[in-house]
Length: 317
Image (tube, rainbow, N blue to C red; front, side, top):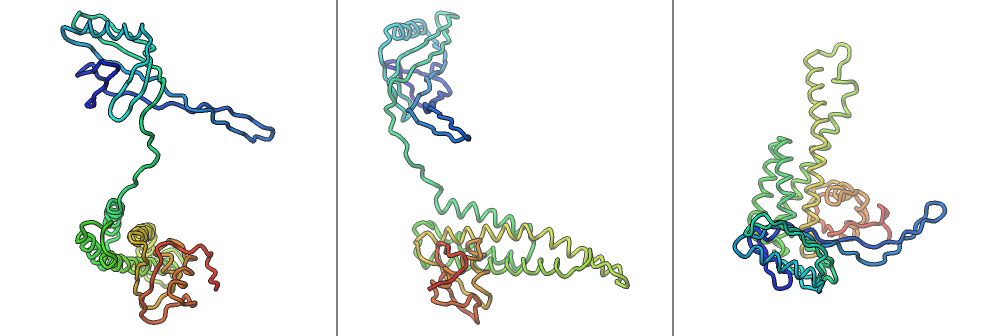
């Protein structure tokens, strides 16, 4: 155990110190079981786990150190127990030294907790935006490699370059974030195109492999191959679509501002599906751009809010 362990005025060193000390405990509960299976649970308070560990006293003072701890057990006094950032008041409940030699005395000890003086941990810091984007980027690169589409690979290369050029996404200016969001949006558009192409391939084959009378075997085989490829690629494409949408949403939340996405035709429902994973959230994009028609005419740069709309696909007001 690298940290220093102390009990009263005894410091545990080297083999005296344990490799691990379980801590924590349970909550005392009173469970009232009602007719029909309903339950009421009353929390009565914490019930801390006894703190126990083992080690070995070694050296010329091994016996005297073991006897000193045993005297502390006999006295039954409350003692401070501390390691790392944990601090307790405890009473030694059980101390069991084993005499092997005067200079080798293994022991085990159990202390009952009187009070826990450690500062409570009331919150946890989540992963940074850099960690989130880095993890998703790694996944996206792996998925892109397995898809094997040249255009998509090139677009992902642009995303990698854009992200690599930002030292800290958390502190980046909105213009810098937009410089990363744009290539991500381009990847999303290409993924949507590939999904549509794969879905069309599957839908246009009326029979397995297109095997019908008077259909040459070579043509039937080619159609069968394309159908199988389309079936295999769709799950990966949908997975990549989800990952890129999450990256876009996380980056959009860095400054709280809306991201901007340029579209050449298309519709807001598909855009909402790409960004949020929910086509019904198109209404929030429509409101942000003061438009009512979900169909995008011509080339338009749209403001896409960080958070999706929960209007359920119904545009009002």
